[in-house]
Image (cartoon, rainbow, N blue to C red):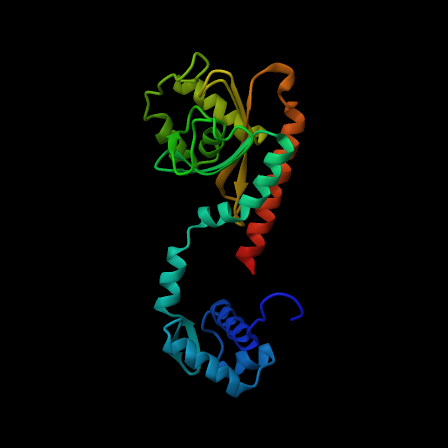
Amino acid sequence: MRDGTPQLSSFKRTLTMLEAVVDDGGASSVAEMARRLGLPVATAHRQIATLVAEDYLRPLGKGRHVAGSRLMKLAQRLDEKQLIANVAAPILHRLATRVRSTVQLGTLENEMVTYRIKTGQGASALFTKVGMQLEAYCSGMGKVLLAYLPDKDRDNYLAGGPFVPLTAKTITEPAALTAELIKVQEQGFAVDDGEIADGLFCMAVPIRNPAQQVVAAISVSQADTGNKRMADDVLLAMLRQAASAIEAEANVGTDR
């Protein structure tokens, strides 16, 4: 390697073997896996033996293996939503620079929006903060996350009011909120025009995982001051471009 820290080739080959065994699901023997990967059988046996000793793999017999308990526990600790936030961070920093406004990423937990990223111009002045949870019905990101819930979950949420008005524009009637969420799902974005705070405009779009489930939302918040606000169609195009970049990067990381 000409630049940066040298890599351990043997470790990379072992990781390749681990991934191959997990993908194989215990259907093939070590010898078959070695031939498939173009490795000496003796090397493959040493790799597998090491992974079994560390409990990353578990033997099934006849040279076949599946994921071990240590690997399973590691996988369970991975938070898909936080992984997407990690991927999204540099993309949203760039978006914030372009729109000269506050950009945020949120996820839905226990019917509340959890704010995971907040960046850009005016971020310190905006009342939200990373780690904060806020009601979903009155924000752009919240509407997106609610709109794409399974029908039963969305219906349960809408039946669980009352919905408290935060401003004169907050949608609080369940029927009106239902219509708003259907509209969000149909058009693929949500708008909060002074519903969570007077004078604040927010537009949000969904972030999907490889299974096309909406697992997060991103938004741009701007002061609703007429000509100082970016045109809605321009803002929407930039948000969607950022969302596509996040999904592409996250999906590569998931599938690799």
